Image (cartoon, rainbow, N blue to C red; front, top):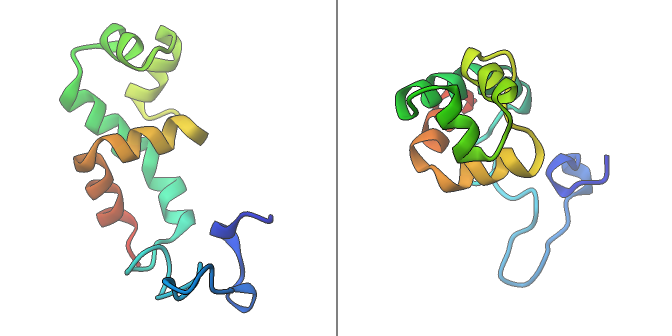
Length: 106
């Protein structure tokens, strides 16, 4: 995979004079994050967060502009957002982001 997020350490290069590079530090930001742990933990953490913040599957479906089946699967932890939707959710809700980081920090 060519994404900068998945570079091997030996492929790290400085991105500009203000940065020490894509692979600076010990992982993403100042702490190391296990992508495998994130992939395993995200559905359950997201489902719990949804149940704490939304009334029901209809509320989830409306808020996230998804169908009720998707909302039901998210609420049950069967699956969770992916791609741009996951990134948007994690960026928009600091409490969810904090829970995820706490769960996956190595």
